[in-house]
Structure formats: structure tokens, C-alpha cells
Length: 245
Ligand code: APR
Image (cartoon, rainbow, N blue to C red; front, top):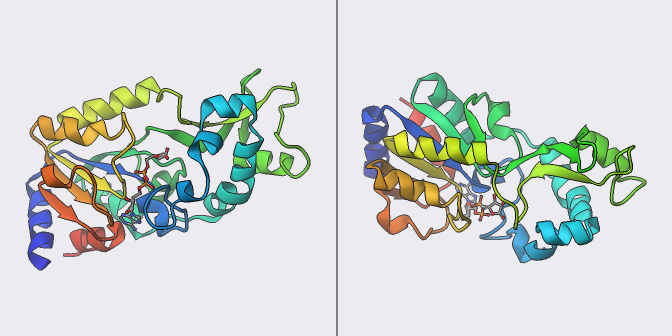
């Protein structure tokens, strides 16, 4: 195992433009459940009901109950963990030039990463679908104490600034992420099952453009066999080794 860590350190040392690509796994050690793998949210909640735009537009009460009981309480109190902090350190050392995240929890920014691309948006901003007024998570959580689904003062429906199944990704974010995947010389996957597209296309684009592909994920992924290095370990454990001298 030590040899694998040394190979990773050497890869970092010889790379100039490293992109980190994170999924729900990097936030699991901050107390936020993953969607797939052991105890994943989608084993308890049907994403076609709880995280699908068509269902949301028909009846958003399922989503808002999920937000109120499952997501808000853990995201509200979540703090960046050692993996988020290590990425911020590596950015300050000039090693990582972009963080592309599928996560909506804002923990990379909280840890100090400044070049973060939120492919699936953020739950920290909630918009009125009629007048575009923006609410915070806390304001909407308060509304949920006496109204479900929560409404804007204009009467409009509210929706977090996140990408639900059936929605397109924010084009600017996808363009920026695709450019980063094309330009990097090392693409580091951290805590993603790599099964949701178009996000999961990014490691393939990087690899096809000659970048080294490193996957750090507790469970095997469909891209393990094309990766240059694979760690079935926790992201924090591996990254702490990388930044330690
Ligand atoms: N370190 C590394 N990997 C971990 C850790 C950890 N501490 N904890 C869990 N994992 C791994 C699991 O093995 C799992 O394969 O993280 C992966 C998380 O996979 P998913 O839950 O599928 O998360 P993600 O890949 O981000 O899902 C993509 O699917 O439901 C949609 O919009 C949602 O953005 C999400 C997208």
C-alpha cells in the first residue's frame, strides 16, 4: 500500500494542473449521507419521487419533507472534513487548480477552496419560481414549520438551486468543468460512484486528453480499470498521506 501512496505523491509532484472531482463520498465523513453504496439515501427514498423535476412540479411535498427531515438538519450542521481541508491546502500550494463537485453542500468553499465548480448547483440558495426572489436554507426551513410546500410572499413555489433528475446541468458550470477536464494533466476522483452523467463523462474526457486518472472511492467504480491509480479507501485517509511530508 505504501508503494501506491508513493506513486500518488510522485504523480502530484510531476503534475502541473490537477483537477479534483468530488462526489457525495467526500462529505460522508462530515455526516452527510451518500446516495449509493452502504446506507445510501436512494436505498430508502425513491429518487424518481424525491429528486425528480417532473414529480417536484406535480407535487413538491415529498421533496420538501425530504429536505426538512433528511437533508437540511445534516447539511446545516456539517463542517468540512480532512479531505475538504486537504484539497484547500493543495490549492494553496498551487497543486490543485480546480475543484469540480457534484455536491450541493458548499463544504469545499467552507474549507477554503476558491475555484469550485458546482455541477449540480447548491442547496444553500432557494429561488422563487415566479418572482426569482432568493431565500436562504434557514429562511425556508422556518417556513416549513408552518407551510408545506413553502411559498414565496408573491405566492410562487420555491425550489433549491440544485439540479434534480430530469433537469439539465447549469451550462456555464458544465462548460467550465469540461474545459478543466480537457486542460488538466491529472484528474482526481474523490468519493463518487461515477454512474451519473454528464458528470461521469468528465474523467473519461480527461483520460482521453492524456491526463492521469486517479480514483479514490471506497467502493469499486465502473472506471477503475481505466484509471492509473485506484484507492478503495476514504478520501481523507489518502489525502492526509498526500499532504504529509
Ligand atoms: N471516501 C471515499 N469514498 C467514499 C467515502 C469516503 N469517506 N464514503 C463513501 N464513499 C464512496 C461510496 O463508496 C460511493 O461509491 O462515495 C461514493 C458515493 O457515490 P454516490 O452516493 O453515488 O454519490 P455521487 O457519485 O456523488 O452521486 C452523483 O447522483 O443522486 C445524484 O445528484 C446526486 O450528485 C449526486 C449524483
